[in-house]
Image (cartoon, rainbow, N blue to C red):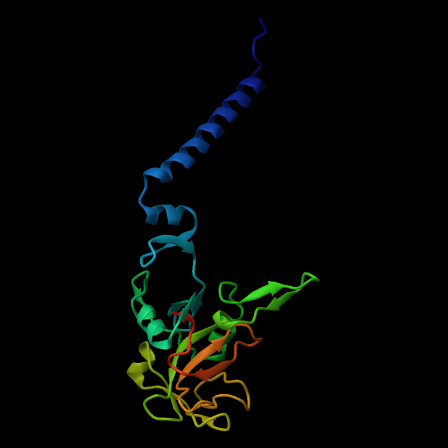
Length: 221
């Protein structure tokens, strides 16, 4: 009977250790709380849906403040979207419909793969996908005073931030940021379009105004 060589013994031990480790790694999550399973899979635990979801894109301001963003593709009104967003909590941070207060933040959202609604055409090139669920409510409204657009959710409400006055021919207030479709929006087209949404299927993610009962997705922050 041939004796194993030193190299063969090392190889066998290596295979055993690798196999044992793989089995342990596979079995341990079964005995862990769901939150830990999410962590091990590099995901986060969604308390509302009680499931693991991909990590959210995070934008950091110059002062170190972090913002997390999530696209929820559901056919809901602005009121429903606002309520759902307020009930969210991520890492101890209460949620709200997204408020976009700078060009830098807008560009971050534009480039977030979790938010961009893209598909591939016949040539394999990325193209934007159009459709109602490809637009999403944001936390802007002029329902209180027609033509006076404010952020009505989140910390911006504490400062009463008004960022735009008028329709498409209006102007920004105090150099506040806005991203309306140039020379088109806001138009109050049906005389009751008092709530903002963002078009995720257009380059630049331009804003539009619509009726509170129209149904779109939501971007929560």
